Image 1 (tube, rainbow, N blue to C red):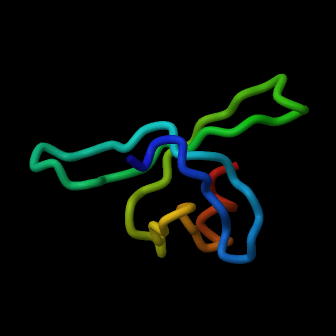
Image 2: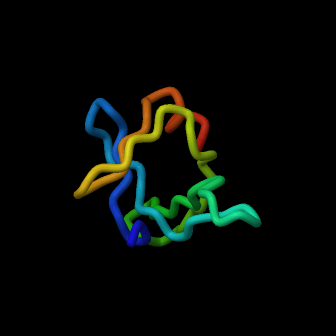
Image 3: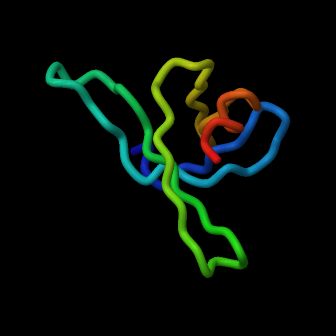
Length: 73
């Protein structure tokens, strides 16, 4: 139930939302596909965020360190 969960930086900046969860052969989470919109929704972008990298999964959102979010752009 992680898909469509908001992704925020630890400082509170919205990054996008989880579009997909990538799993390995054993079913463990490897990475998250993060989607978002730019230019008022005219362009859509997708980035992959490896699991780990300080990612925290909360009840309302997925939190990522600001440094990890900077690598998504």
